[in-house]
Image 1 (cartoon, rainbow, N blue to C red):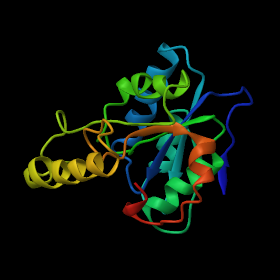
Image 2 (cartoon, helix red, strand yellow):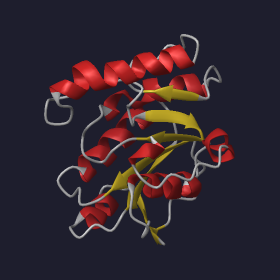
Image 3 (cartoon, rainbow, N blue to C red):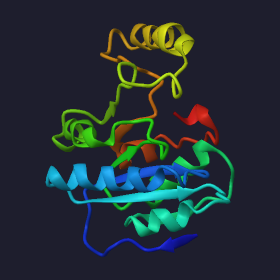
Image 4 (cartoon, rainbow, N blue to C red):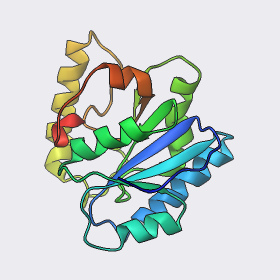
Length: 187
């Protein structure tokens, strides 16, 4: 269900922010994404996918210029899939609405996809993630081990944080995969 339709101007990039009770941060995330992409000359929209919030998240997202849709099916993957399907941009960025990722650097994430040198780019958060968003065990054991396994499985593909939910990709390439996960495993 669309709460507010996007502007009629075509966009290159849609930033999809799944949201469940993020009233304390969603507005700042919307502002940061808009500012970074507009400063880089990229036409964009920020699409907040409300996943059954009970706080003021929707109201705040709308006040900050986001397009908002609702995804009633619970789960991070359900919200991301709904956002990707509803995106107007040819390039989609997925991030979180809780200030986990540095959205001021979003244009750097998008650029390899925009210039055709990559279909997907993974953002790295290990060097800057605070302890509150990434416990030490995840930072120093879990994520590095999983990233090593991904590098080995992909013949040494350059990946520094395989578990990052901060990604940019061609919308059509991801839709063609027919992903169906509804939870965190989507990432």
